Length: 192
Image 1 (cartoon, helix red, strand yellow):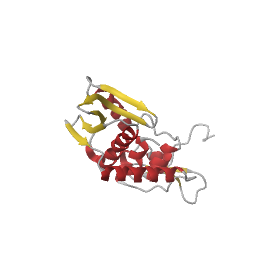
Image 2 (image 1 turned 120 degrees about the vertical axis):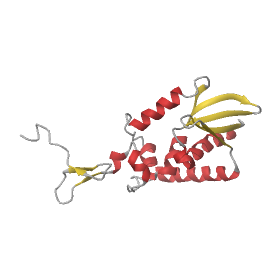
Image 3 (image 1 turned 60 degrees about the vertical axis):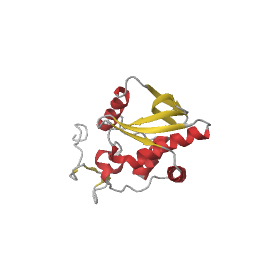
Image 4 (image 1 turned 90 degrees about the vertical axis):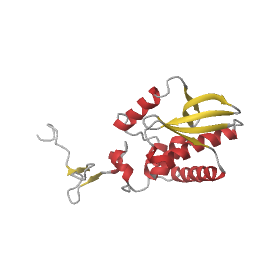
């Protein structure tokens, strides 16, 4: 179980299944690379990354009053529900370990900081997401692909939208992001 899985399950159950079964997304995907760069370069004066089992918090600030301040750096608030669940998961884990903490979602490109407290409602949503991930990971195959708006920018896109052309045996056809279906080019060896 990890905060990343909590984030994924809030967006796409198939994506969560793939990640939970150690099927990594395309590492050089442009948005993943931008996210890593943003996380590494934003807020240079603050301590980076707290890594614990199932947790990798982007920012940590020594106690702010009576609570530790943890932060997640994100490109935009577009998936804020999933981001709040991820940060809520970290806050819950820290509370269960006896650490009082509060959180912030940080959007450096927009210069916005969104405070996140572990309210009873957020805690209930996090616990429901944990149960959903646990059930999902027990499944032997991923959920069927379902086209949602997040698909357009997903690093797992090719895991979901490559299919065989009907009636032609095993000739793979790729459905591109624009909906155009293309047959892969034959290699020189296949043409002989």
